[in-house]
Structures are given as C-alpha cells and as structure tokens.
Length: 305
Image (cartoon, rainbow, N blue to C red; front, top):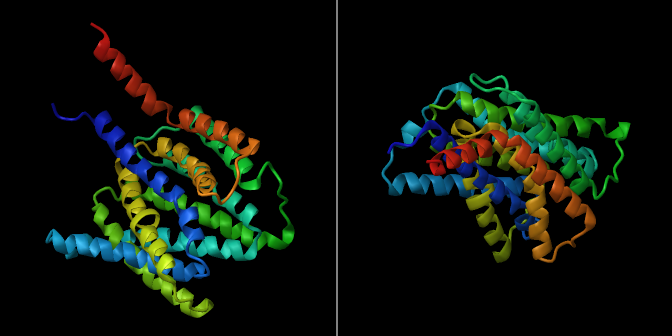
C-alpha cells in the first residue's frame, strides 16, 4: 500500500525531531571545545558539515550543480537563517547577560507556531499557542534557574539582538516550507557559505586558538551532528512535517541538553528541572495534538471490526 499523506507527514515530523535530539548535544560538545572562540567554532564545525556533504555528493556521483543552482531568494533565506541566527546569537551574548539573552532567544518555537498560520493550508488553533506558551514557561524555569532574572535598560541592544535571533530562526524555519521544491541537500551549500562568513567574522573580531586533539574531535562531532545533520533533518521536518508539533517539541532541546550535562557530571539535578520537564512535556503534547490525535484515531480504526 502507498503511504497516505498523514503517514508522510508523521514520518517527516519524526525525521525533523532528530534535529532536536542532535541540538540537545550541542551544549555538552561545546564544553569540550575549550578556549576556541565562538566564530572560529562556527567556522570549523560548519566547514565540517559542508565537506561531509560534498563527500556524500562525490561518492554517490550526484549532480553538485543541481543542488547549488538555486534562486537568490533561496540562498538569501538559507544563509540568512544559518549565519544570521548564529551572528545575532553571539552578538546578543556579548551585549546582554546570557540568561536573559537565552530566554528571549527561546521565543523561536513560539514564533514558528505563530508564523505557520501564514502558510497555505495551515490553521492555528488555541491548543497550538497554549502548548508553545507552556513550553516557553518550562524553558523560562530552566534557563533562569527558577526565575532569577531581571531585564535592564542598559542591555537593550542585546535584548533586541536576541529577539532578532529568534525571529530569524522562526522565519527561516517557516519559509523553508515555501521552498519545498528545493532539495534538502542544498543545505550543504548554506553550511559552506556560513562557514566562510563565520571565518571572516573570526578574523575580524577574535584571536585564533589552535584546537587540541580533543577539541578537534568535539568540533568534528559538532559539524557531523548539531551543526550539520541537524539542519538537514530540520529542513525535511519543516518542508513536509507538522510544523506546530515540531515547534512544541523544540522546547525539549534545553531540557535534554541539561539532562545530558547532568549525565556527564557538568551540572546537578534540581526541583526546578523537574518542574520545567512537566511544563515542556505538557506543552509539547498540546502543540502536537493534531499529530498524536490523528495517529490514535487511525489505530482505533484499524482495531475496530
């Protein structure tokens, strides 16, 4: 039997969710990059991602030009999303306290839910917004360690950068749906341009630190996973999956990241973590109600004589 549209959507959503698992490993891997500065880290890890993609094209004798010959709007969206997000994120961290900057940055899943209402065939329901807000509340608890934060006027530039960061990623993710005809492999080209731009920023703003063997391994794993494969599977999820479900599930990224840090002995569990877990899981369930409700109905239909 040929897969139904709902089967294809569920499969694409599951593929997109792999990105969330990969991004959860980013914080842990970053702790192993030592003193390598941020833009140098981005340049190396994205270079790894683009080289691995090029290797895949060459081994499979694919038409490289077919993947890269895309309209200017596609390149502007892709590079603007990947490089723009990271540039604004590091700018926010330099001009505002990390807690507040991260909290504003994590508005992007909620923005994806809201922006998705502008797409053809998408309908925004109350439970989608409620799920995203609930996830945001859980992230607030997690990022601020129980709500200890205070916005101050002197950091306005940093707050604006963090908000622009969230808007950039939300817009890139939703606009990917409008470019559904563009092959996912084109993301490899976006990674390559992002690596070059990050290298230029590194040369302009940072001092080069030569990584040691352990740091090279961490950078390679980052390029293969959270700053590589993650963007490819996310592209599949955004183009063909349930956008609102993926947005709700995205709030589990800081949760899973914290859990990995606990397992690795880099931080300790707490009551705040448990509460954040409840909020985020509950929010993800609400935001993905369409998906699991449809699967439940399908299972019921199959078991009913």
